[in-house]
Image (cartoon, rainbow, N blue to C red):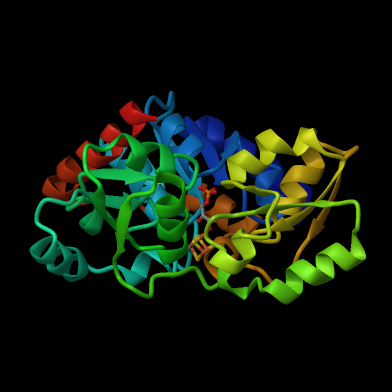
Amino acid sequence: MEREKLVEEINRLKEERNAIIMAHNYQLPEVQDIADFLGDSLELARKAVNVDADVIVFAGVDFMAETAKILNPEKTVLLPAKGATCAMANMLKPEHIIEAKEKYPTAPVVLYVNSTAECKALADVTVTSANAAEIVGKLDSDVVIFGPDKNLAHYVAKQTGKKVIPVPEYGHCYVHKKFTVEDVERAKRLYPNAKLMVHPECEPEVQERADIIVSTGGMIRHAPEWSEWVVFTEREMVYRLSRLYPNIKFHAAREDAACIGMKAITLEDVYRSLRDMKYTIEVPEETAEKAKRAIERMLEMS
Ligand code: 13P
Ligand code: SF4
C-alpha cells in the first residue's frame, strides 16, 4: 500500500478502535510522523498513566509496551512487531538480582526501565536515564544494586558518590557501545563549532568528553542552548531533533548506530497492528502488581 493510503487507513482504524499511537524518539521517521505522542522512556511512562483511549499502539521496544500495560491493565496494548525488543533489557535475568541481593542484602535494587517485567517485579524502584542519578541520590542507602546498564551505573555512581553494584557486570547497549574516543575526535575535527550531546549508555571514556550527558528527552530540552550539536545516540534522534529545531544543526556521531529492535517497526506494521489487533502485550497479574509498585515509586520520586 502507498504511504498516503497507509496513513489514511491508520487514522481511520485509530478512530474505529479508539486507539492512540505512542512512539519512542528512536522510531523510523515514517512512524514518528504518525505518532500521537513521542518521547523518551520516562515521558512515555508518565504519559501511559492516564491514557484516554481503549487501545495503545506502542511503537517502541517490548519493555516500554510492558510498562504501558502494567500501568493500564484494563487497556489493550499492542506492539506492532515481534522483533521489537531491547538487547540490553534481555541481558538481565532474575537470578542476577537474587544473587546480588544475597551479597548485599540491605542494598536497594534499582532497575533501569530497560528491563523485563519479571525483573522489575524484584526491584525497589525503577529509573530511566532521565532520573537515575536523582532517584539514587534520594535513596536512603550508600550502596545500591543497579541493572542492567553498567555505563549508566557508572554515570550514577559519579553523580551521586554512592557505591553502585552493576548487575549483570557486563550489561550494555550494543548501539551505544559503538561510540569511541575516535568518534569524539572525528566529530571535533569535522564540526569544530559543535558541542557534543551524549547518552549515558555510552562508554565512560565517551561520557568524559561530552558537553552534556542526557537522556533523549534531555537532548530535546537542551538543544536550544547551542546552534550545532553532534549527537551520540541512536541515529534517528537526529531526525527527531531536526524536525523540532530546523534552525539548529545536528550531526549523527555514527550513521551505523541503529537499534535493530526499534527499527523492527514500520508504518505497515503499525497499520497491520491496528487492523488485526496484534501483538497484544500480556503481563501475569502477580508480576504486574509487583513491577507496578517499582514503576510508581519512580514516578513519585522524580
Ligand atoms: P531514553 O530514556 O533516553 O529515551 O533511552 C531509552 C533507550 O533505550 C536508550 O537506548
Ligand atoms: Fe535497548 Fe540499546 Fe535499543 Fe535502547 S538503543 S532500546 S538500550 S538496544
